Amino acid sequence: MKLQLRLLGIILLFSIVASAQEPAPAKPKRTKGSFYASWGYNRDWYSKSDIHFRNTSGEHNPVTGNYDYYDFTIYDAKATDRNGFKAMLHTDLTIPQYVYRLGYYFNNKKDLGIEINFDHAKYIMTDWQTLHVKGYISDQYIDKDTMISPETFLHFEHSDGANFLMLNIMKRQRLLTSKNNKHWLSAVIKYGFGPVIPRTQVTLFGQDLNNCFHIAGYVTGMEMGLRYDAFKHIYLEYTGKGVFADYRNVLVLGSGKAHHHFWAFENILTLGFQLPL
Image (tube, rainbow, N blue to C red):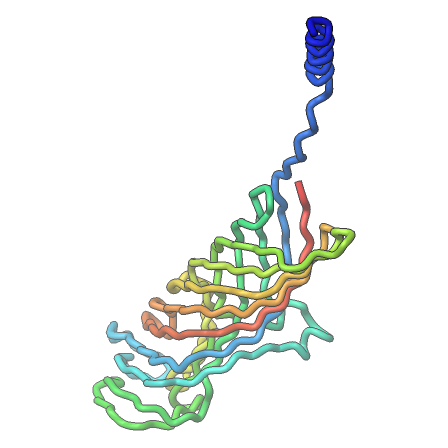
């Protein structure tokens, strides 16, 4: 019996020594995230908007010979986008309503990230619509439905861009992965906030002005959609985006300013390249 116990003790001792000498299993390799950049195009739809025009400086207008004074609002103005896709085929890739993104997924699973998100969206107020106009034009008070004529009264558009610049926080959730792990489909959601930087073209009382780019207000919104990744470096992303944009300081003629806000919905398709670290 004592011999059996000794043998058992020796076996256990050898087992402990052998296990202590085995190499520890390798830890999984940690990733440091990935940078990416993308370019694409968008289509946009806008809610109706009340647009307030104001210039109370009383500046002398050499064209009309009058002193400009106006403080009026047009109500429920309709607007459309101007996609410009036909021009893309024979002129410039930046003529249509383009978008670009620069981003970084920063955690081990690459499902959280931050993104600089720019949308060159065009806002074109519809000409020849009949809208209610209320306020003062020169020394005349107006409160009636009025035909919005671009020749004699008003044309208004952010045609060099309504221009939404946003900083987004992102979440990505993988849905499907190929067997060789070279293709995968993910759901993405983004929320962001930032400035609007329009360049506004306006015709007011027969005078034209294509103004300069400037920060005119803010935009906030959410974007959701699908992202297809291939071979670690290429991806295609399709999203829908809803935003609220408030233009508090739109430059118009002279010292005049315009103010309006609207809701917008965008369809966005981008093609991108990513660089894992």
